[in-house]
Image (cartoon, rainbow, N blue to C red; front, side, top):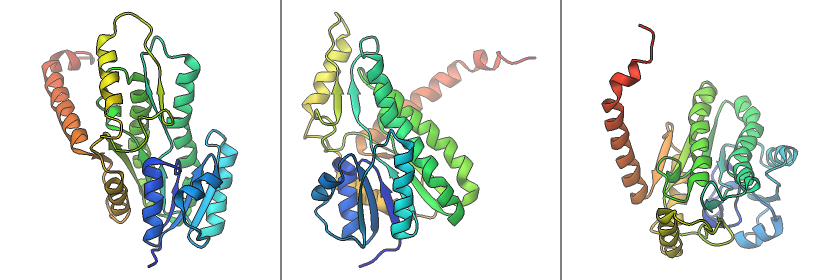
Length: 279
């Protein structure tokens, strides 16, 4: 079986990224996938098929390295049809205690890297007058939980970036979706994907309780990464994919409740809101 689209996926050595790469290769797509270690990535994928699979070691903090990986993908497969900005990790803690360097680091990985990859691939997509960019967000970017303030801020930034990007590139036939899952059963809550800052300050009981609850769900999350990967593959075949796509029943319920609450508050304060204009 052979499919014509070429995919470029970051953060592909584990979790949803790895699952997606495997499913794409099983279905005959060409896949360029990045990780910090190309050898380990190739071993994790377990497919020796140079015709369809290009594993790349890329430092996503290095714009030149990203540009080189995009050019190599184009040279190998002739084009890039779908980009999945999947690389990222989680962080639990309280804002006043998380070191500034850790805050900058997670923004570099979860936000800046996605923007740099997008910047690098857009000239090629504009030239071919088509393309699809899937940015991995999170329901936490819209409905946060205690202890996830910094992580939620990175995912809210990705949602806002994706929304405006979609407006900017629509005239070139390029589509953008921000995928916003709740808990997928991956290694997200393990030490390899989660920066867990122990709270050393008295109080913050809601944060401490939520922290324990989340960590207790590791390996029990309701979200199926295989089904999520299949959904992303289906989206890439749609002529008009959604701007936002929440994944999982929990994500749907949380987003629905937030929208209702926001609508109520907006109307409650409408007179104050509009009173800020010149009359």
